[in-house]
Length: 191
Image: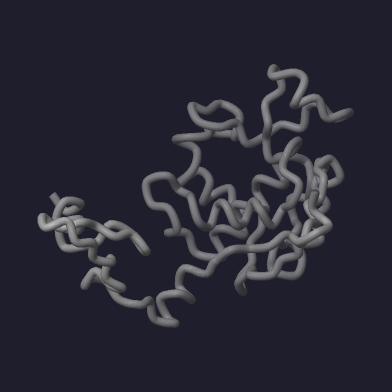
C-alpha cells in the first residue's frame, strides 16, 4: 500500500518521528521524494475564482437568447426544460417575494432568483462546476450566456441585457441584503 510505503520510508507527517526496531527515533524527511512545485502557469490556470465585486471575471459576453441554447444542450437534462422540473436543483423561482423564511420554513426551495446574493457567484459556480459531466468545459461566452438566461428566467434582468465583466457585478440580486457580510479581519477584535 502507498500509505504503508510512505510510513515505512519515514514519512508520517511533518514533524512526526518514528521509532525503528532498535527503539531509536528518526525525524520525518523534509520531502517524501515525489511531486514537484506547481508552475506559475499551472497556478494561473486554476486561479479562476470570481469575487462579488467582479474581480476575476474574464473577457466575454452573453445574452439570455444565447444562454437558452447552451442551457438546452448542456443543462436541461439535469435541471429541466425551464429550470424548475429537475431532477436536480431547481434554478428558477422567486417565491417568496417578501421576507426571507428559509431558515424557518423548509418548504421554500432555494433558487438563483430568491436566495443567491450575488450574480457574480452564479458565474463563478457555473464556470467551475458545470456541466456535471464536464465541469470547467464551458467557454466564458457560454457561461455569460447561461448567467444571462438564468437571471432573465428569474425576472432579474431583461431578455436583451448583455452580461459581461462590467455589467454582471452591477446586477442587484433580490437576496443581496438578506445576508450578513463577514467583515472580520482576524486578531483581537474577534471574540
